[in-house]
Image 1 (cartoon, rainbow, N blue to C red):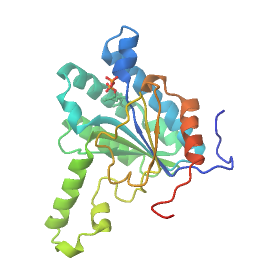
Image 2: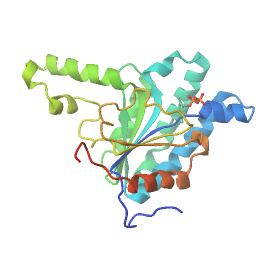
Image 3: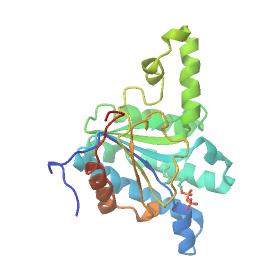
Image 4: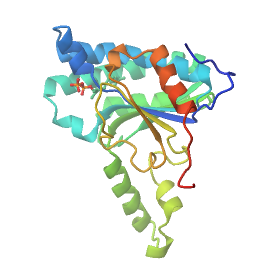
Length: 236
Ligand code: FPP
């Protein structure tokens, strides 16, 4: 069953997804890993559509971590090409759906052409308000926290002025609500340095399905599971 906006259920404000299993999906078909990444990038569009339809306000997808630079050069280069293609092709698709694009990660050290495309896409979609799509690239949660702490010190904050809101407002997710639901595909039960601070009270949903096989119906299953849970945020 696919959930629809307006159904009387709890909808998470912020859904984050670790898109895992592209390599295994490809290996299972005797294909090179890069085919898995290509198939995986196509799924992103369906999930954005479903999230907008459901009234989700923030969707964060983990596409490339700070650790992923250690992968073979050829694989890194394919993921970067997919990213370039994605950034250039999707401006009107984002606008038509009312989606604002946000690059989540360290942009400074990315290749110049990608930086330019990100700045353009963020500017072109800045007025959209149905949902914010955060694409995590060159993202590592520990790095994000270290940088936020350094920024507190650079801003001259004293030790007792460094509180949760001082850190929160210096993260790449400043002004973004905490994650309500974290989904990870492909059977691994790990968080892999993704939104560690923001997931403090997130509900976790793991599925064995590899990312290229994930679809709107499976997304809906995850949302149904979320809707059935009782969240206590540390209370009894
Ligand atoms: C995890 O699968 C996936 C990634 C590290 C990359 C995710 C990238 C995409 C979905 C495509 C890129 C799209 C854009 C828009 C940049 P894995 O390779 O770790 O799979 P495995 O664990 O089965 O080896």
